[in-house]
Image 1 (cartoon, rainbow, N blue to C red):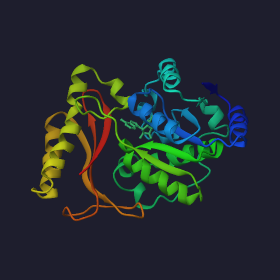
Image 2 (cartoon, rainbow, N blue to C red):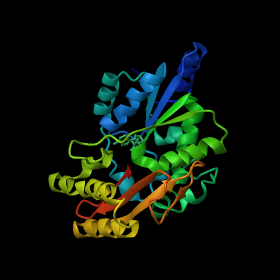
Image 3 (cartoon, protein in one colour):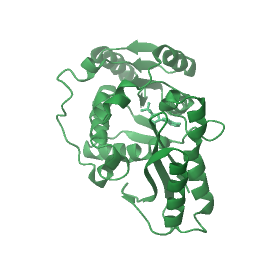
Length: 284
Ligand code: AMP
């Protein structure tokens, strides 16, 4: 695997590959890799000739400075996992390399209501930061396909929108959420949980599973209220539990009954004893 820390080195390597007719698959990450990330690398390998992964803990997408400071970094293990997975190129830039002119945004993206609901409401400025870094990475890597996880469902919708805003031809491939054996969605932030907190974190998955198995019988309002209560009783501060539908144009609505469009249950909650904020979602 090639490892580049500089943009010019990466661009030179990829220009050669593109001139050889290679189709590039790209997996942007913030590192502390787990099997969820590797599933994206595997999907990229199956669907492209050359796989590029980036590891960059992007400061502009952290609305909470403590979350940024505590974000896990496991670079040696990450390199080993990517090598074993057969990733071709790792881009590992510094903050200075990505933001030589400072962190102030030069551009504002119109993500519409995606920025004012759910993650957008709970994390002001987060999606502008995501847009800023993914836009820059796309310009550098110029992939044919971009691989992202359904775990971050709203992020996928934002990136779908970003691709339209910047008139990009890149195909967004959304890959399923990989879970631990007991159902907990894999996440780099799980590394910050001690064994008791790790067990407690399972309440997110259990809440979503309960909704999945009862949404045809119970009212959506009752299901949401039950899930919120269960999480609060288990030591969580709940940002939201919602049932959403995604329309064909990528916009999100909050239906009052089950209806016909594909429904997802989405949750975000902070495990109080660890302070770790977790998100998850499930198609119903
Ligand atoms: P992150 O490093 O958390 O920014 O995630 C990088 C990419 O991996 C994003 O597209 C995530 O949606 C995806 N991802 C994170 N966790 C999982 C998971 N458990 N299963 C599948 N994809 C994931």
